[in-house]
Structure formats: C-alpha cells, structure tokens
Image (tube, rainbow, N blue to C red; front, side):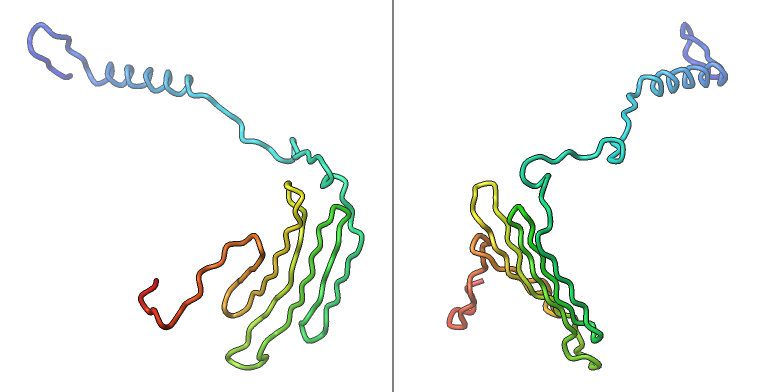
Length: 144
C-alpha cells in the first residue's frame, strides 16, 4: 500500500495495476490499424505508350569465354545495347567490363542517350543531359 499525506487517497498496488491496465487497453484500442499495401492485390496500372510497348528486336549472344553482346529495341522508342567481357583474365588485375548505351524519349519529346562503362574503376555514365564534373587542371592544384 502506498501512503500519501493525510487527506489524500491511499492506493494499494492492485489498484495501481488496474488503472495502468485500463490505460494500456484504451491506448491499444484507440490506435489506428492501417494495412500495408499489397502490390499483388492492387497491381500498378500503366498507361500511355509504355503500357502497350512490345519488343521489336532482341539479340543476346553469350560466348564460352564469358563475353556477351545484347541489344533490344521496343515499339515506344527505347533502345539498349551492351557488351561485356573479362579484362586481364587469369591475372590479379582481372575485371569484368560492361559497356553500352541506352536511349529513350523523355516526357518533353527529347530523345535522351546515355553511354556507360562499368569496370574496375566503377560505373561511369555520360550523356548530353547529364552534368559532368569540371576537368582537373594541374596548373591549379588547389582548385578543388
């Protein structure tokens, strides 16, 4: 039993636990339950030319040495091509190299093309619409 100064209520541990239990039940029942979205039940609906795009041309040529070439073109103007090969095979400097390009028509009607390479130095992409870092000039070593 908890004793308070005279003139106040005296509570025992059982009463305190009942009050806490009631408060916890009120909090639990007032919480909103929102179900997580289920993409299988509500699949995304696509519209526009992408919804009915079909593959017009597709090539995939794997080679026994691990190199490959692939390309495809779709009816909505998307094009991609890539080739991959093993650089310096059998050496400590062995690295997989993938290089290619892809293009698509943006919402503004402009065709965007990205050329890329991925190798031991990472992924690097270039395109007219992609900003590029300024070139390093050895005359000004403190420029960056």
